Length: 571
Image (cartoon, rainbow, N blue to C red; front, side, top):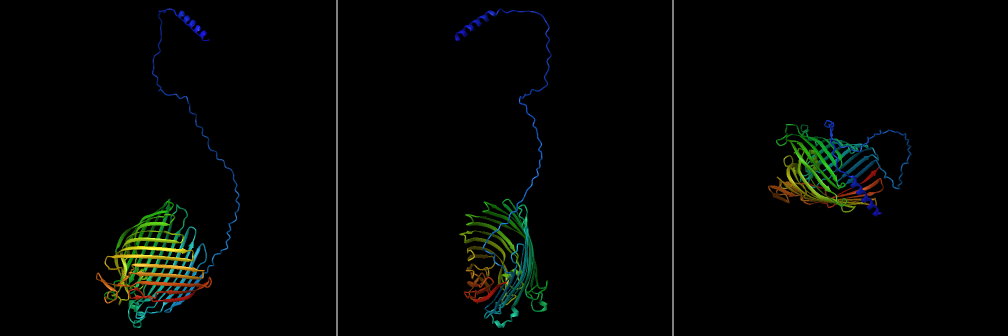
């Protein structure tokens, strides 16, 4: 095959050589027309061979179908339990009598179970007709009544209450034979009438702002002096307060704010008049306004919490001043709330009134000086948590600077030494505190608090009548739901009083001031109750088991061992 192809190739090559002759030249004349040249006006463009198809839109057709739904009724769930709710009784009465002829009576009325309404009333009385040997008459009585009510709705709640308290006492801090001073000449009686009302919203929508608003009023006065011309020479004050707060949660932050206005008008005597060279009328208007915005942040599944803000206060008293206090706190939960360390910074203004002074020391004189307590700064930190499901604890330390701290000292100007005047000083306070609590269901409860206070004052040598060491223990034991045992223990050390007689025992002279040690306080109280049934019980109260006649205030000893017994009824 290959040989045949080669022979054909040679034959064709030879034929081609023979067919090619010499060149021929032809000459001639003629007319050739050439078309005129012109410029193309179109721009060059790339012609794509892939042509785009038009997008066809199809409108959506609304098709409605009639759907019928049938609801099946579901029977309410029923929970069977052998336990029944404890029966409630509307009335509770407690009647007793103690040594030194001390009658006791209490009556309570409360509403029963209701999801919407709560209401009730109470009346109390306690008096003592005993005296102290070689001291002025020391009888006292305390009575009070009150009513309260409230409405609980899904979106809001209302609360309101009215209270009246009447307290009588004697300034018995005079070391004289009991029969040498008429009891009426050293008697005092406080009248306290007040009420408050509040409204709170409970909106479940997180986009809504929840808020609380409230108003309160209180009237407080001391006893009228003898003689028609001295009727107005007693302490009287009218207190009015308007409070409000709101909070809003957005994500992991809670925005909150408080706005409060508190006014207290104190009067003693007739304005611009006096009954002696040292006893002049007092008219004081005391207003404290504060605005406190804060932001709280919750992180790490709410284990970390931080609060930051400020408390802006206007103190309109003798002079009008503005104060700004920091508000900051950080705490973190570790090991499922076993340890919660925390640290914070704060401050504030405390409104001091005649009533607040008498609640702290009922033997204060009728015309005390009033100044608002200013905590410039308070730095604190500590750790709290739970050691087990039954044991919890809290240990903390704080350092604060307080201006115009009220201190009680013996009054020698308006009384022979059986009343207390109020002086004010600036102090730095270091406090170390530890608390532990144990609870075994409702059978056993024990609380213990230990506290150490260190005071550094600007003018005075000591923080008069304030303790340096404190130990408080409270316990409750339930034995077979038949016997109830309560124990209260209060130990105090380091209290001192300012005195003016160098011949007093246990008196030291420091920085020109005579300081008397008030000794160690060991106050132990034991309460026993036997429940005959659910409606009747008997109780026995043993007070001051150590039988220690310690000084509650300078020249004001307490009664030694006391016994009180009685019965209670529910109906």
